[in-house]
Structures are given as C-alpha cells and as structure tokens.
Length: 321
Image (cartoon, rainbow, N blue to C red; front, side, top):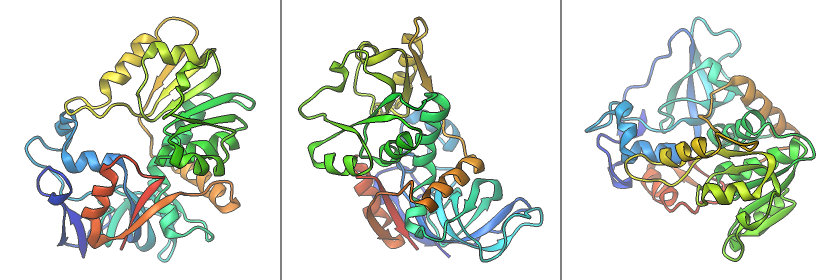
C-alpha cells in the first residue's frame, strides 16, 4: 500500500510516498481502508521533530516510526478477534496512528461510526481539533449555559469547532480572528467577533467566564484582566518555540493562576470514544459542521504540509486516498 512517510526530521521535503506493507490488526483493533485523513499541528511537529523536547519519545536523531497522521475516516475491512461492536463494511472516523496511508490499523475504542450524512472528508477533520475544543470547554473550562466564552484563534481547526460547541453548550461566544475570517466566524455562530488587527481582546475588563486560547499571544496579567472573577483560562496551545514549544507558556499559566479565584487549565486531548460518539450525534443532527479549507490527494502530502506550516489555515486541511 501507499503511505506518506519520513525517515528524517525536517520541513515538508522530507515527506515521500512509499510502498509499505499493509498493517495487520491485533485482537483489539480494526483495519481501516482510509478515505480521508486530516492534518494537525501535531503532525507537523512529528514531521519536523520540533519542539526538540518531543524527540524524547519519537526518536532523538531520527523518527522511530516513519508513518504520520492520526485523524482518520474510512471503511473497516478487517476486525480483530476481540472486537464486537464494529463489522466489516462499517464507515468510521476517529484516531489511528499512521493515518496518511491507504490502510491503517486502529484501536476499536478510538473510533466511532461515521454519520451517513457526513462526508469522509468532513469526518476526518473532526477528531483532534473537535475533541480539544469539547474537552477544553466542557471538561476544563466547566462552561455553563448563559456564560460568556472567548475563543482566541477562532478561525483555525480547534477554533471553528469551539465556536459551535460553545453555542451548543448555551454560551455567548466571542471569536478572535483576522478581518478576512470574520464572516466565517460569524457564520459558525459567534455572537461577537474581535478583529485582532484593530482591537485587543484583552482590553476588556472582567468580561469572559472562559477564555479558550489556541494562540498564547497575551501576557497572564492581560488574560486575568479580561476574565470574570471566577473565570477560567483554558490553554490549548501557545507559542511554537523550537526547544520547548508551548510548554513555558503553559507552565507560566499554571503558576500565575495558583492564587486567587481565577484559574488556568492545561490539558492533553484524550482519545475518548464517548466524546467521538457525542460529536457524531451533533454532526448527524446538523449541530456541528467541519470547515475544510483545502483537500489534497495523498501524493500531494508535501504541498498539504507546506500549507499547514503557514499557520493561516481556515479550519482544517484533508488528505484524500
């Protein structure tokens, strides 16, 4: 089968399409014929080997595993002996390491059934970004109906889902984006839009119950000023420094909010089937939609990664097999 792999760290030129062995699935896995896989900053970090701290797990001088990709949608072609809730022919979406390929083995508990009214492209865009938004708002931010949430980086992958999920949770939503993306953010349900080219969202005083931050471009003192007295600062990401990445920003948030009524939440997205199924219900009902800026065939994985590296993607990018 064909797979987009890299055998060394670097920019998009290290990616190549190679013929590799089709994976087998273990007892708790299924084999998925991939129809689409989406790109995330997580994959870009895996390709470049930055921040360097991530190499402690992925391989210091070169990647331990050549394959890339984690968001997937496709059709099950084989089922492990211990799997009882999926069958051959089922259309699914979720998480599978090595998704930039024609086939991938996936843990059954990291997948959900794809809604019939949702395309493979739109379903593949969901897992990492939408779960980060859901878990950040609901589990970390403890967002309640009637509260006011601000999404910094509202037009990106996590942001586009966060706006819709915050509205579903009953919140008033303010999205921060550029002038060019303001209409998109409004179309997703944002009640207010702040154009960061002309206005500083942190200039507001005690305005937001939850700030979901995908960018990390404001000081902790500025964030505190715009949070309600019992508000929560949810850190999804931060500055992409070469050695430690967003870690210093996250640690600074934890330390800065140790005292007082305001709090900070730093987390890693969890691959939970229950959350995927919740999102599948919203997709099926029309309460959630994916924003996919561009679709690339697998052979153009380099071009797709170059696009992702600009940091200016509207929603998600998808590879099609």
